[in-house]
Picture 1 (cartoon, rainbow, N blue to C red):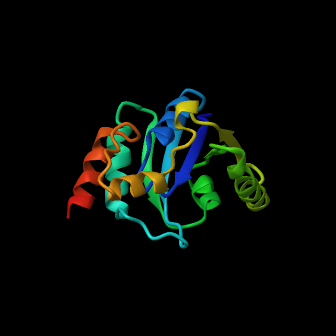
Picture 2: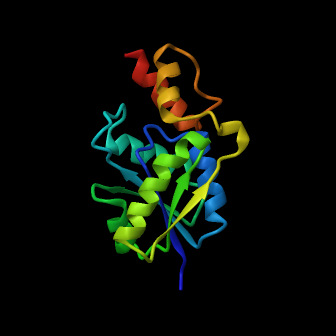
Length: 160
């Protein structure tokens, strides 16, 4: 049976840290489904269509990775896709408490889906999408921190 994992996030935008985790996870599971999720507490810079496009372009070299949009609970798509795991990235200890609470709730809602915590390469531990949006809004070049398509889209977004 194929081992499927999902990697949910708003990916606004996808960063090199996200890509690093996805690359490594793609070697651990038969299929990774990157879920562009909607977070009701966040206002996104990029539209859903833009985020899907950037993620697909950034991950096109990984044949066992699929990018989808989802508007429900993460455990719902895990069930729909017959996933055995939900991948979550941890950059620092400060991420753990929140992620731990979510993992416990997901386990309560769907005991057959396990949460797998993965750390990005240490050169990406300080990265997050908020920081990337912030530096880009001040005209700094984000190319070192994001895939080329994302750097291009950020530059376009803040030129206007």
